[in-house]
Amino acid sequence: MHHAPFHFILIIIFLIALCYLFYRLILIYNQIKILDKKFGEKAFKEKLDSLIEQNEENKIRVLNEEFVNET
Image 1 (cartoon, one colour):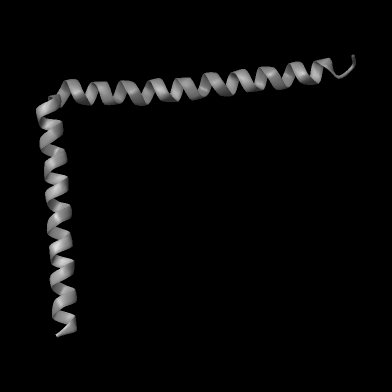
Image 2: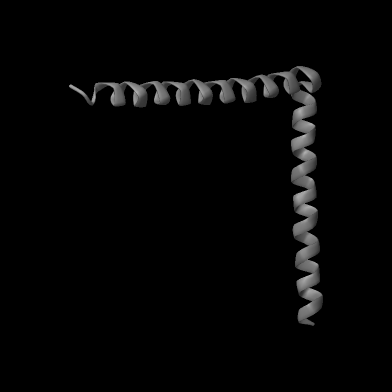
């Protein structure tokens, strides 16, 4: 029975770690909610579209550079 305090300490550490993880998740969730309220769904979609567009432009540029290098 003299090992009980050690297990007790481990359980407490585990619970604290769980609480910390939940705290981090809630913070992240709240930041996303604030961003959503601030900019709205439309702005979020526009931002996403612009990122996709930039990605496509970068792909095209890279392909063009590769083509130029090959010829």
